[in-house]
Image (tube, rainbow, N blue to C red):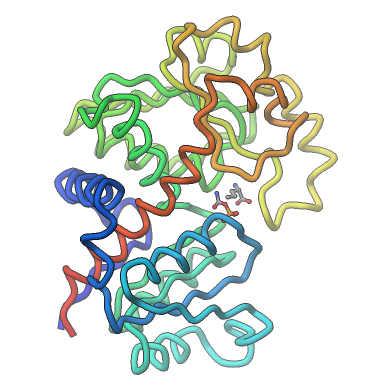
Length: 312
Ligand code: CP
Ligand code: NVA
C-alpha cells in the first residue's frame, strides 16, 4: 500500500506541481470531463477552526468529481480529547478515502498522516497553508502568465511571516518565483522554512529575499501579497499587532511605489483598514476573488492527484 499526502508544500516536487497545475487547468476548462472521476469516493473534512473558502471549495469540489463529503467539527469529534488523533486517523481510514484537516498544530497533521492509510491534506495549520499556496501560484500561472512559467515573477509579501507566508516560501522554490518578504521586526517567517525554500529555489531558479522596508519591497514587483495581521488563534495579540504592523498596510501610498501592472493578492478573509485598504482590495489590480475561485480548481486537482497516486 502506498499513499501520497499533502502535509506541506515540501511533499511536492516541481514536476508534481506542474502536473497539478495542468490538471487544475483542464478541470477548469472542461469540468464536464471529471464529473465521475471520484465516483463513490468519500472525503472526511475535519475543522478545528472557522472557514469559508476551504470548506466550500473542498465540499463542492468533491461533489463535482462525483464524490461525497462528511464534515466534522470539533463539536462532533473533539479532536485529540475525546480520542487520540492516531485513533481518529485509523478509524477514518476504514470508512473513507481521503482526510482533509484544518487544525491548530502542524503536529496533528503529521500524526494524522502517519497513522492514516489514506491521503491526508493539510487545509491550514498554524504553520502552513499549502492548498492556498497551490491555488495562488495556479492563479498567477493561469491568468497572469498565460499558463507559462512563473520564473522571474517578483512577488512582494508584506505583513506577517505566518502560515501563508511559510507556504509561499516553499512554493517559490517549486515554481521559480522571486519572493521578497517584508515583515516588521520579530514577525519574520521561521528560519527553517526560509532555509528549505532557498535550497529548493536554488535548484529551479527561484529566489527568497528579505526587505524590511515595504516601499523598497514593492519596487519592481509584479505582485503584492498580504494576509491578516492576526491569524486564527492569535486573537489575544490583536492590540499589540495593530501597533506593530501599522507601517505594513497595503494602501494606495504603498502602491505608488510599485509598477502599474502590479497584481494585488490576499488569501482572504481580509480585515479592511488593517493589512489592506478597501480601495486597494476593490481596485482593478486586485485578483483576490480569482484566487478564491481557484481554490476550487486547485483542490479538485489536488484531491484527484493524491488519490491517483495512492493505492490501498
Ligand atoms: N483563505 C482561506 O483559507 O479562507 P477560509 O479560512 O475562509 O477557508
Ligand atoms: N493566516 C490566516 C489565514 C487564513 C486563511 C489564519 O491563519 O488565520
